[in-house]
Length: 467
Ligand code: ARG
Image (cartoon, rainbow, N blue to C red; front, side, top):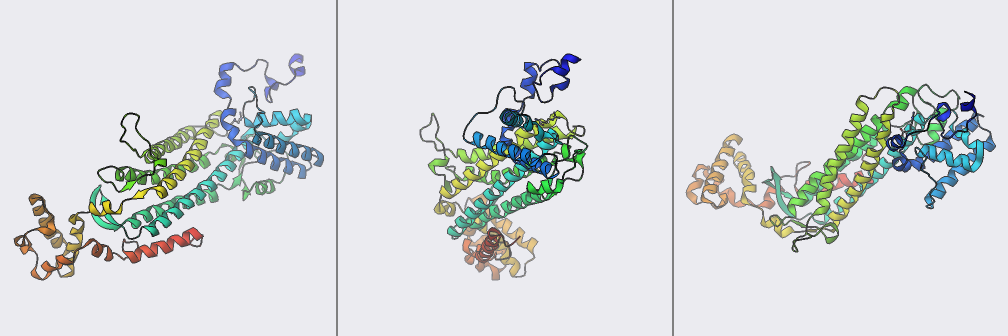
């Protein structure tokens, strides 16, 4: 007994331990390589915690001043490229405390007063996700802005709109581009809601029961930029739905851009030829000299799978973890760091690839078939008193007959048009792609006026005045 009590501490928690940790266990358990990503948040968190302790007279002003100066010094040193960590550092939180204590002696050990790594990690992690959410929001806005500019520039290009990857109806290419703008706006709203919801600081919750050193938790929370202190210490240290929601929001953004990336892969094929990505966003083949592949878009599509994987990893982690903290929860960092990094690079590449691509308006036009106008002719019949179902049937007959003859339905010989009431027959000559588009100025439609309205809405969104 005596021997243990007199022994010098090797680890910050080894007071009750006699034997050291096995090498294999260290490999399983040490997380510094991953969680050093949290350095900045850890320092910010400790500064606020120390300030709270000083205001409550738990630390003296001089002690806090010394701690704060050296915490800032550690951050500055790492930013300068100094390597401060060693193989015995379990995680970034222990590493910072060790270096602090080495630099200022015993007073450094006081920073952990009334704190557990449980509330410390939960706080750092939440701060990190909030910071990254803001970065992603910014990236989404930049992409939206690039889309709006491109859509305005290309607003006279007409193309086939597709459903089931079959030609459906004529659309303006810009209408297509703006569809992504508004999808991204929902992605943004989800992140804004995330910031609103996850706005409470766990600090002061201790390991599970709340710190026994009463300090002003709300003040410390606000010092950190949170709106409030968390209401329940058990919930504060154990919940990971913050990470779950963050990963879900990022995975959804990944899915949004992935669908467009898929279209662009298809469109850049020889068969479509609507689009040529710039060299900076394509790759060649190591074997086939003629190849220029849309790798940027394929990778973005692939990364969407990875983002979903990170989300499901987190779900599996939390679904059975007992309250409050269990060590499984240490595995929460890697998916979050990975998803944040992944989505940011995807959004940047997607935007840069989009603005540097060449869009081939002639090809888009060339590929449009008369089939795109079938609905408009049915609508013309309706306008002349034919019930829509009957109109649909008549036009279906014409299109079917033309398919058999392997010609455009608008070129069918006169005898085929006898099934159309005479007063409407001649109207078919009015059918053009431009006519079709001009009939769709309903709110949200592809007509030119409607598109201008979309531009206006988008401008308000970008100015931040529509929220
Ligand atoms: N590295 C750990 C994590 O990130 C720190 C928390 C350890 N807490 C504990 N009670 N062992 O989850």
